[in-house]
Amino acid sequence: MPALDRGLALGDGVFRTLRVRSGRALNWSWHWARLTADCEKLRLPAPDEATLRSEVARVAPGDAVVKATITRGEAGRGYAAPTAVRTTRIVSAHPPPEHPAEWAEAGVRVRRCHLVLAQQPRLAGAKTLNRLENVLARSEWDDPAIAEGLLADAEGRVIEGTMSNLFIAAGGRVFTPDLGRCGVIGAQRERVRELLRHEKVHCEERNLRWTDVLAAGEIFLTNSLIGVWAVRQVDERAYAPGPIAARVRELIERDDAAA
Image (cartoon, rainbow, N blue to C red; front, side):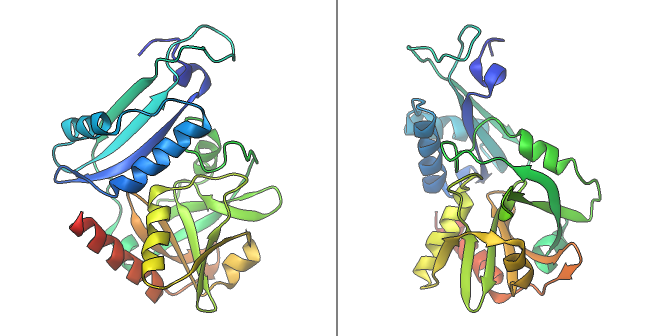
């Protein structure tokens, strides 16, 4: 990789992380949709889908986590983007994460992070290479019993976890934060919303405050590696893992098996 690659020098690029099981890329359609949407936000040429799929298959013939990174490629010093873009594409395979089994079964403990997310609607939703906010937020705790941290913006709107998307259930309805100002739209988040629609469960995007989170009857987190984690505790507030998270887990497993 050239030392002057804009992904390294400026964070000028995007990435997506997906799960591969027995050589099959899970939830591919949503990963591809989000990757191309992110490229469009940054005005990056998206890779050829068939080429990327073949590269994923080549680096991950079994069970793995695959990270696909697209940068604007090599250029000289300065912010101005080159007129002729030759993107850099990095596709790497990694071992699946080893989380305690009880986290999936009994739920997880999470905390409120002190870091405040900046707002940039132009980049909202995209998984860009600039993840310093997540890095700093994740460094706020080292207690291995805490699985995740929740992040809010300067107006107190709860946006996401450091590595996950957030859902809450209240009054028989499901809500997930509006990510029009900041945050990452995860492929798993979009699949969960789609699966809930098929179940005739409306999942509304809306502004969520800490009071909404603390008053919720059920909270769960999603990403492509953890699937679904029910939340059993946020700081001192305890929750009982509920039926919606359990049902979403079943739906994801069924969808993965059918892929």
